Image (cartoon, rainbow, N blue to C red):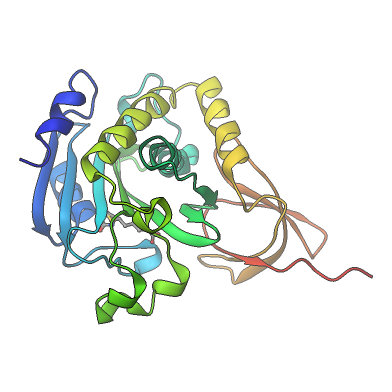
Length: 277
Ligand code: BTN
């Protein structure tokens, strides 16, 4: 049964409770509901197919049945010692994105890079995305629960054989099977992703752990050094050069307005470099 091997190999980690289902609306939505009902940290939900998969910024997430690793994990970052500060919540997304990138390399020999805030790219095409959704503690000062979900394109039909509803995505996306030239085991991937998340997540309570993760993030970010347009959630957009990420994983942009901006949330478009002179 799918999931048996993963459960066995993850025994002793906080992510051993792996449930693998054929079809579900959204693994993130289901785990958020479980979190509201008091489910403990560490539950993992994997689906072969989602009928209402969710992407960032209210978008949908589509993948042909059985083609992708669609997985969500339930975290309770207030239970870390010390707890994860609310301002560093983006590092939960970063931990899963880094764990996924390293799993792609160890299981399939494909090394993706990251685009701020949450995409895994291969040759500038999107291989995976991460979506974190949180429930705040009643005082609004801590994360009672965060569900972090990964959609990773694994064994996709070749672009010419894609179902019509996803065919238009083909020029901008990548799949591990296309890059590796063979099918890749989603179960091996999920074990590698969750093992990689285990050690990255465990250190997030300490400042030094967060600094270490931010350095790993910096080294993998193709966004750094690029000219970017950042579409901000509320205040329009910002254009400039991406120069750094902070220890909370926020993007630092040297704006064309001559000021330095720290961006905690937004959508980034990589622009061509401005012509000289
Ligand atoms: C993005 O927009 O880039 C993030 C996409 C995240 C998709 C994954 S698939 C598993 C989990 N369940 C969902 O409904 N969404 C996330």
